[in-house]
Length: 239
Image (tube, rainbow, N blue to C red; front, side, top):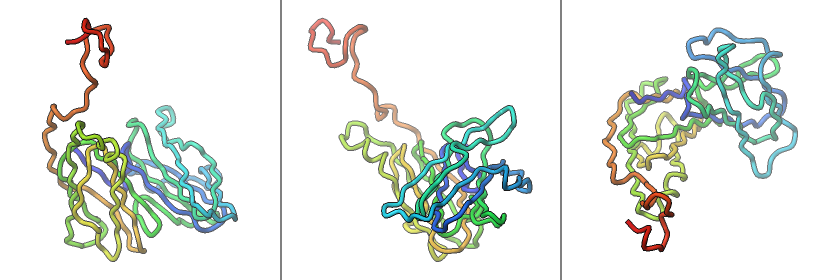
């Protein structure tokens, strides 16, 4: 069963936040079902925002791993220094452990960002690995909009197919609507939801229509006899 939920981050999800104010910010990672367990600030991972403002804002990545011994999520790096206007992305490259959420607080313990409820300057991304039609919604609103993402299988015979999968598709959320609400994405592509405005957003896929993969369209290396390079000109190596 293929599902995604921006409140419950898994291997192919990530969330990003832009930091525009200086100071020290603390965050913790927890399993979705344990929302009430908030550790002390001095035991949390830390992000320090310097006074310098980036002329060209950078994106910093925090990799999340699951430690089976302690049954907790471990960020790397645990301490990070960025400039104003830089963004920080949290992602989990492996599929071990449960889904998790991110909660960021200032030095006084006031919550300023959580992946449970995305607001302005927040970004949610998801990697689509299988062709099909995916419908999603903002479960924190009563909107009847049912946008769709149509993931198609890429034809590897086309010279530009690697570029197609590395160019993300951008969807904006503003004034209670996703725009555009109907997009096409190649398999292996990434969709980016940019949250504009203060309305809370939790993106959840609640139905799907997966398509059968055409085996003739799966990229494979050229064939060659054992011990011969696929591109050899030796007649004895030709199949």
